[in-house]
Length: 347
Image (cartoon, rainbow, N blue to C red; front, side, top):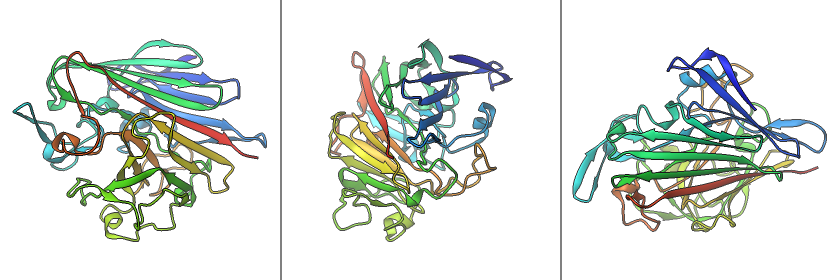
């Protein structure tokens, strides 16, 4: 189902809202601005419905938040140090969007664009976006597609595809924030499992400053499920960024059939399993969510939502040595990244 809002977006046109439904009664809403996930409501065995996504009360409020709530981000998700990289002997300078660094594709990234609705029905929607040569400093013309599918077993499947006419780093992801308790409360009471043996330490600006570190014996060891609160802020790597905001190199190594992460609500009545073809997940515990406009009660506080962003490791264009596929997309190739969020209610 497609609706247009009476309120106009920055380009002077209405926001277009899309609703997906499955046979289990799950309802997902999206909008074309930023190819953004607005809501994901899961029916529970007791007859109640849980809203699992953080979001604003109306589409126009998304323009005034800086948390990237539910948005599709690109061309390059996460950070590129000093907003520059070298490729094939050429130095490229990007537009910075967080201090001297570029975050999530620049000040006018894909989250701040209207995506074209290519096709849609009650089960899926396909968006497309054209990004011109030099956009935010990136080389080449890029065409991106974002397909969102709701399956009957309560999976939100997100598939990003892209092609380029010049070599360019490409890293597309969705920045959904989850709270499986279904209300505005501290997400650190959730249980989390991340099937990863290594993580990437970062400095206070979120930039990697050393190589990957084993999770063994650290607060970043989520290989066995534990509450997020258990080791929260217990070491310097966390304290630098007020919690978890780190990439984990996944055991699945791109196998979308293997779980990458699992999350349980505080009451353990709702479980979410994450599958992805991406090499890494960025786990962000919502450390700077405070002041973000909330759907129901004014503003969110810090740590009221968590993001599990599927992607290449941050600053990969400057670190070709890292053990993951090449983040550079070349003409004639196609970038494909698939991520599934599978919701399982428990009685």
